Image (cartoon, rainbow, N blue to C red):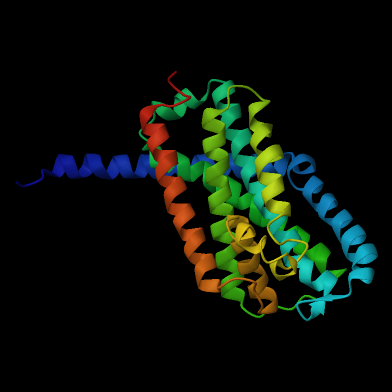
Length: 269
């Protein structure tokens, strides 16, 4: 069956409209991050600086070396990744829930944007903030630790996939949240404990034998170690397994987020 010229022209217009809509979401998210930088960029940088001073500068002197590296050098990649995780999640959950709360999500729903592109638009905003914060914390880390890069490509892939995963997590949290208290419940009681227990401040090999299999159920452990491997060339887990887990979580959460949008969960209720 042949396709008419009018149909092709209409499809082209729809694709251009969708692309413009996607760009608009990303641009709005970026402008929001930059406009209120004192809330979006500065707090995680200050928090990371305190971690470097207290855990690295004071406690680290007593700990000594870990994994064959100075303690400050060892925890620096973990501290960077911790801020990337928390800010990527927080950016999307607050932004998307704000759109729901302010009732301007309806403008997106009646636009020619497909739901999967709406999801990607918000996720791109989370990735932008996560990467900006990660870059700023990396600069701060240089004042405290002698960081050198072993694998640039692994660092880039690890931070991108991790930010993508937790941006999707923030989006899903924003869908189910009923009020502003709900957008802080998951980060406080689930995300923060998993992050602190994800090998940011220690090597999983230091745990008792019975605790190591339990720690390996924590997906953040693989993300932190994948990122650390890019800097130091060492990891507590198989680096291939780390990236496999990140890709699986990215695909699964994206499918869940798009499915929830298609069903109108939390939006049309």
